[in-house]
Image 1 (cartoon, rainbow, N blue to C red):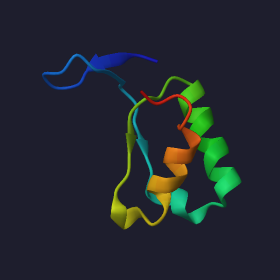
Image 2: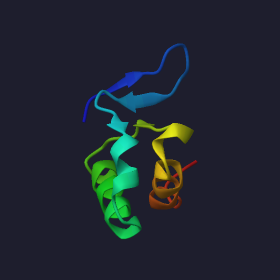
Image 3: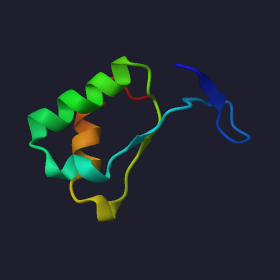
Image 4: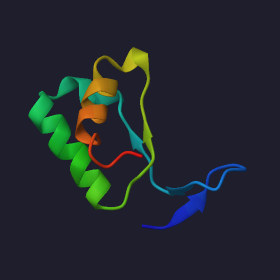
Length: 68
């Protein structure tokens, strides 16, 4: 997965991002599996917002052990 520098930071993010809007439609175990699969493919840019239902919580749980 190709990465690019995020703005003026030293963070390298994947050119392909993961939009979390639809994650709220999935059961917790399904959402975790999808998010983890995306992470394993090299995606490290996840976009979600309060208006996206419970997607923030599901993405947070899925990435809990790999966040820093």
